[in-house]
Amino acid sequence: MEDTAPSMESSASPSRPQLNKYALACAILASTNSILLGYDIGVMSGAVLYIKDVFKISSVQEEVLVGALNVFSLIGSLAAGKTSDWIGRRYTIILAAATFFAGALLMGLAPSFPFLMAGRVVAGIGVGYALMVAPVYTAELSPAMTRGFLSSFPEVFINFGILLGYIFNYALSSLPPHINWRLMLGIAAVPAVAIALGVLTMPESPRWLVMKGKLDEAKRVLRKTSQSEEEANLRLQEITKASSVVTTSPNSSPGSSNANLHGRGVWKELLMPSKPLRRILLAAVGINFFMQASGNDAVVYYTPEVFRAAGIRSRKGLVGVTVIMGIAKTSFVLVSALFLDQFGRRPLLLLGSIGMVISLSGLGLGSKFLEHVTQKPIWAIALCVIAVCADVSFFSIGLGPITWVYSSEIFPTRLRAQGTSLAVSVNRLVSGVVSMTFLSISRKISFGGMFFVLAGIMVLATIFFYFFLPETKGKSLEEIGALFEDKDDQNNSRVREISDRQFFKSICI
Image 1: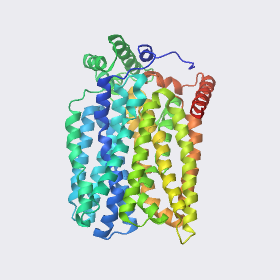
Image 2: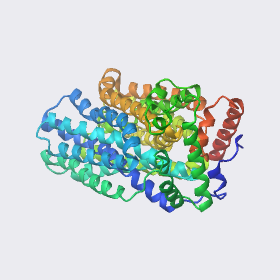
Image 3: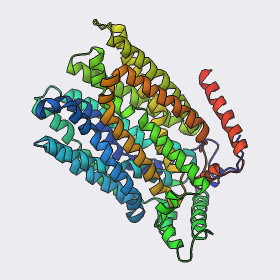
Image 4: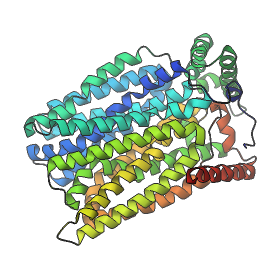
């Protein structure tokens, strides 16, 4: 089907790709940091109900409190690229867990609103580090034929963390208001310690080791994460060949090769990119932009507010509905992870974005109807609950996991850490802006109007994904760059359309 030759990694794999248990264990450990972000997103949606009562904060302060973690995660995302090139992917994951640990303690023990905000800032920086480095580490460690599944783990754990946050909200909501929210936020410090200790047992990324000239150590890691000695040797050849291209690049000045290999000068190349690199940046930044412009984080954060407007008054009832939403969200991200390497990135991404357009439109209609009636009929409330669950479920099928997979695998080795950090920084900035303005805009145009706006954004996202994101399924990291070259653009487009048609035909049968 594809017009390019099969990758070395692909040729070393059987027709049905086998999952390497060592690579699986490493991917799980690396991605557990994402539980902390997910937990914060889930738990804050309930905790803020009690924080408002204790500290008497306004709705604007509520938005700032919720969005601060996302805005300040921008700092961690930007710093993570350079940090992970300097100290390695593994120690950067440990740094992320330690930073979040400090933030969770500050939040749980905060005597005032400013101290609570300080905790959000520190935790946000830790989240930024984790969101950038976990997908990069997993993508660099994984064989090509199972990379989609393994690289989707960060989103799987984010959703698991969200569900845990909802469950703790529900379990602790009966405690006195001056205690329950502190436990909800502070308890996240416990898994942060466990994650940091667990990551110490992981190996370093083989591509980072090659970048540092540690070929023997890289080969030992590749042997453990490959199905055979032959596959390990082929993967090492591809990685070292890609690294040698960097050092012999005609654009490199004398004495610059070592600097390029070790990450210096990368920002200059990213800010003044070649045409293929511009396409990579457009794809990576675009998918990260639309992931957060879809409003998913804001919908999760403010679900209690949305359902309160819909007519659900009981606080325990509000929290209970969010648990149902969390179960749906977590279930569908697992489905996506299992089929990413079978169907590919593009078909699932398009299915998810089209589903979000329909779900957000239904949520907008239901919300608009409820705004204009005094008596809230059960069917209209049920429509809103189903539409929210469908929206987050389609997000978990497409944008949720695939954003992390795609943006971590399309950059060349020398640019991967800092290129991904740039894309994730856009992700965090947009998430912060949407989270900090969602309530204010909704009060101006109503929740129904806001959901129609988000549906329109997802229409644009679907068009963008169709035209600007080539399929990367089954290709080695070193091969993917060829997809963004000028050659064979028309043939690639034809193959892309055939692949999409076959997928949508298969799910309709």
